[in-house]
View (tube, rainbow, N blue to C red):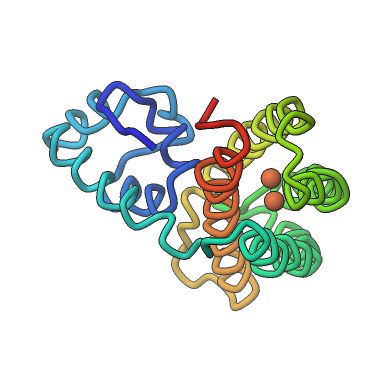
Length: 220
Ligand SMILES: [Fe+2]
Ligand SMILES: [Fe+2]
C-alpha cells in the first residue's frame, strides 16, 4: 500500500488500520471531509502534509504483521478472527443501537439511523462473507488463479461499498464521541461499534493487500 499526500482521507481512513484514530486525534473529519486530500486536510488542521504522511506510513508498515504466512492459515484467521466475530458482534449491536435511539431519540447527539445502518452492513456482510467462504476461499485453497480474477474484482468492489458504510458510521456517531452523562448502553454501543469498525478495516485490509494480491499479482 503506497501513500502520498494527494490521496483522499476518506479512502485512507476506511482502508488503513489505525488511520481513523490518527485523523480523529488531529480533528480531521473523514466522513464530511472525506474527499479532501491528505495535503488539504493536514494544512487545515495546522500540520505539515509530510508529518501526516509519515505518521500514516508507520501504520502501513505495521498493518499486515498479524497475517499468517500460509494462505490456508490466513484464510482460517480471516474466518475465525473476522467473519465469525463480525457476525456475533452485529447481532448484539443492532438491538443496542435501536434501544439507544428509542430511549435518547430527543437528544441532539443521538445516533439516529444507526440501527438501520448496522442492519444494512449486516445484510451486505452476510452475503459477502458467505460467498468468500463458499466460493472464493475454496478456489484459493485449490490455487485456481484463473477462476479468481472476476470474483476478486467483485469482492474489492464490495469492500469499497462497506468503506462507504464505515464513513456513514463515523458520521452518525460523530466519530464515536459520547455526550456528557451518556448512559451505560450508549457507552457500550459506541465502544462496540468502534471495535467493529476497526476490525472491518483490518479485515478488508488483510484481504485487499495481503490475500488477494497472491492471486492477482498485486492490488488492482
Ligand atoms: Fe472476508
Ligand atoms: Fe471480503
